[in-house]
Amino acid sequence: MATPQRISTDAGTRDSLTWEFDGIRMGHAVSNFKALTSFTAGSAAADVVRLHIGLKGNYSFRYHQLNTDYHLIGGHHNILYSKDFDMTVENRTLTLETFGIQFPRETFLRFTQNSTELLKKFADRLISGTSAILSDQWGAVDPAIQQVVQQIVNNPYKGDLQQIFFLSKSIELLVLSAESCRLATEKKEALITSPTDKEKILAVRDLINEKLDCPPNLSTISRTVGLNEYKLKRGFKEVFNTTVFGYLSEQRLLLARQYLLDTQQTAAEIGYQLGYSTPQHFNNAFKKRFGIPPDTIRPDRVRPGGEAKRRKNP
Image (cartoon, rainbow, N blue to C red; front, side, top):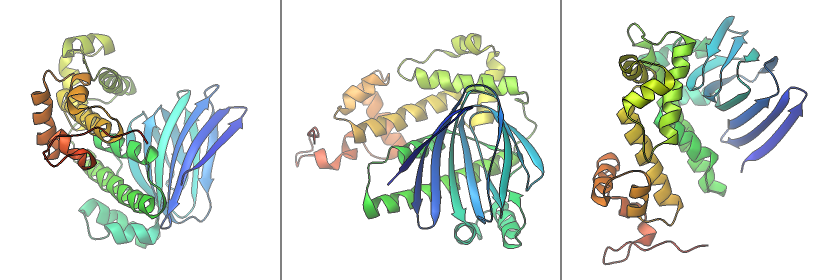
């Protein structure tokens, strides 16, 4: 069960949710500041590995155990380790949204010690007790990571089932983050290097998310954010590891699946709502992505003859 908390200070408010299971701690927080400021954060002798995800907002922080400064723009993640944990943070926007998971060191090693070369090197530093960061290049928050975070925050489960769900999703986020960081380390010379251009690419993502049912074309997006089409397309793929069209398609289908699970709408209604021209077009895209037709994702609503029935209100 989530533990909600609100902290109010002269600087602003911080609303958070935390969950604990199997020695693992997860948290989601939204901070609203009255002004740009700096503050400290940390913990003593926790000896945990932290998966940090920045979902919204720009900030800088100094990680004292690594003696390193990081300047981050919304939509990033990385995995960090130190026995103690001390940061000095400067917010560069008035709203920050973050999500994090703390894995006990031994739990993390059990999950990752014999996996990718990047994680093996990271695990070696953990074993020696040396402070470490998985990758100097922070990974991008792509649709898959966004979707898992939302599933955790909005999960409907209780009791033992919730614990199993949280454990599976924490491991899924760990895998997604590690793979994204691996891809980031292997990228050749970057096209998007300035904070201004990175913010414009993030604005493209936000524009698509707001217009999933009727997205603007590339020319309109280019004019809106102030990037030429070449830099927009190359930069978007560089940041999010997918094309603009690929991102749009993935977001539509992930949202469609969520609507199918959480609402009483029919597959045809959801398809039209998300901008598909015909039910067949939606059906084909959904089946290609998830391996099953959209109607069959609701097994409790399928009659023997194959006709889907609507879920009754509780």
